[in-house]
Amino acid sequence: MMDMHAKSMTELIAGLDSGEFTSVALTEALLARIAAHDDTLNAFVTVTGEEALAAAAAADAARASGQGGALNGLPIVHKDIFCTQGVKTSCGSRMLDEFISPYDATVVERLARAGAVVLGKANMDEFAMGSSNETSFYGPVRNPWDLECTPGGSSGGSAAAVAARLVPAATGTDTGGSIRQPAALTGTVGIKPTYGRVSRYGMIAFASSLDQAGVIARTAEDAARVLGVMAGFDERDSTSIDHPVPDYVGGINESIKGLKVGIVRQHFDEGLDPDCGDRVRDAIAVIESLGAEAIEVDLPNIDFSVPTYYVVAPAECSSNLSRFDGVRFGHRAENAEDLLDMYCRSRGEGFGDEVKRRIMTGTYVLSAGYYDAYYLKAQQVRHLIADDFKKAFADVDVIAGPTAPTPAFRIGEKVDDPITMYLNDIYTIGANLAGLPGMSVPCGFVNGLPVGLHLVGHHFEESTLLRFAHQYQQVTDWHTACPEAFQ
Amino acid sequence: MSLSKDQVQHIARLARLELSDDEYAESVKKLSKIVDFVDHLSEADTEGVVPMAHPLDVAQRLRPDAVIETDNRDRYQQNASSVSGGLYLVPKVIE
Image (cartoon, rainbow over all chains, first blue to last red; front, side, top):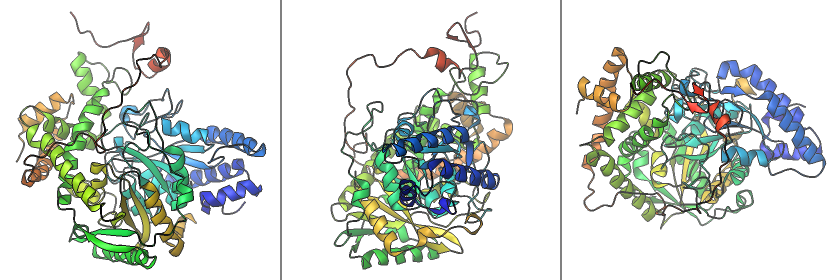
């Protein structure tokens, strides 16, 4: 069957239901594409071909007997941060290069139960710390739009795989922009839900008060389908929130007429590439033409969001990553002199440069004498930022702006300057600090590289974001553009 | 504010990270930049602001104290580099 790889999940469901093709045939076709293209892209750490074909056969059997879940027979890929029973779960790190997860993350379990077919585990920045996928132990992922460029990060393997039509949708995680920024840089749709919307059980922790799982897909409708399966209360995650999950797919067809879109002045300041700014302004004009009203909103403390994040996130990371001690799991250094030597060398060898830098930054801001000046102060500023959003959402339904300050940048370009790299997430971090849902939608190109429109909604308003994105995609075709080498 | 090599060594020790000499040189440079950057926080007026505890202002949920985990020790220990008789082995800590 031709062109199965180019179809959205919605189109694939129609093809499977009508018997035009089977899940086994679809899975074989995508596994063949992965085999043909992944030497170039490096989007996968592990390809689970055998397991995928078995799951596809089971899905076909279920469909034949009139059964099967919402994603029955549809291929997906998991970011290698989600624990997958019996499969290597590396988190992009040498530390976990030999770790075979003894259990499934809730996200993995829910998607499997819905009938999704997992093709493999996606490459990522080590422990999700990075904005370019260059910190992975398994090497950088390449951007399908320009192989010399990064796909963004940390969910760069997920984004590259979806953009290159190796899979219609992939899971990702977002602590400061790690779903939305790679989605923007690869011309895909990425949604990070409200904090607590999706279970973090079995998702390897980076910064627990910010981490949230979400989806990268090519259309808002597909993202709605996958998120609908992932979302919901889980008693195994103490921060999971018991809040009803609406019908995301059903909600996207409603008009956005009369809704209000907030524009933040600081998001269009000098930090933004002027051409990217033009594409985003054009997208907002399209949204206005659909009947929504754009008004200016003020987030007076938003300029503090990146420094706030680079205190809170490293502090939580230094605490979370203390579990990697070489004893129960993970890399252990050989011939240690004593216990302390074993800890220090196992961690020194197992972690890469950026992860060590963040652990040390976190250790510093939490250490005696500095806690008040950094950690406490950052949590206060975080409160100010969250309050600013709360005030803004009294007047608007979504906030719209750019997802990233520039299109995809070249591999190696920013790797030596941590601050320049950190500023990639300048527009996305606010949503994590305030626990709000955020989404990136393709809205055009600059020099052949995709640009993303960023939408932020009020708590638990994923459906509003998906509706805006879907309505926008009904009158634009940026999301159908495919990089030339991957058609 | 610039960090000294002594400070970085102290931090690395607290974080249980062994670094090579090159890594120390690089860390002094880059961590100093990061600390300079986050120092901008001191410009924010936070007089009387309560530190944020949770993005959604909710309290931690409690669950009944019931046994929900079964014994999976053997399976879990397959990921350990050194075990014996159900115990994790580490270098000798008591002389």
